[in-house]
Image (tube, rainbow, N blue to C red):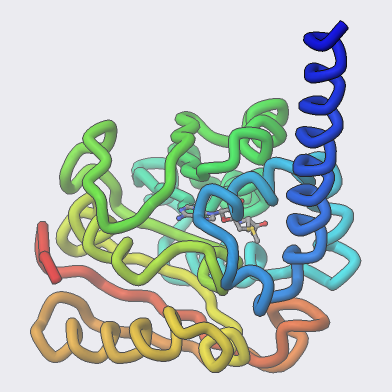
Length: 246
Ligand SMILES: C[S@@+](CC[C@H](N)C(=O)[O-])C[C@H]1O[C@@H](n2cnc3c(N)ncnc32)[C@H](O)[C@@H]1O
């Protein structure tokens, strides 16, 4: 009897906690102040929670970063070379950018994301060659060889709580010298996010001055990334070194 009551109390508490987490996740989808309070694992679980309706939710805000990055890749890489290149999509999610790259003739595209349910959507559609369920951050991921990829791409994966600036250390390691890291960032997130404002732009400049990479930046107008993100920038960093610690 006592055991039964204790089990029931535990169940109620667990359910309340679960509901609270799920509620926080839903609210934090587009609320970057709330996101600041979440751990990287919480953020990944937030994307796990809404993997199945992610695209519908994002298409409702006119989501387009994957179009911008995919079209930039097609602009800088001749069609005949695309099937020879190894590309890693970081923060791959449900595979929108991977699919775009496939449509442009890139045949070797791998996807990395810590949210398993997001990757599962991409898996069902057979988007990527390899699915790497992991965070990209400063830590070395021994499952990925040094200088393995020709290109690293990311769409919509640099804003509050997502890929941290320390991850450039790991991206430099896994991309070949001569390869590129290409991604978009909305200007307003650079202003809101401590991580992006205080670290991303200074880091891009500092490593350019040190000869680690050469920077191409393309200004994006209001509406090019989505209907809510405002103007932004596409950065394409041509990396010259095999490794760099900072
Ligand atoms: C807004 S979604 C973008 C997904 C996809 N690139 C697109 O354009 O639809 C951001 C993705 O970044 C992933 N993410 C969050 N933190 C990450 C990290 N540290 N490393 C890699 N991916 C991360 C999330 O799980 C989520 O799938």
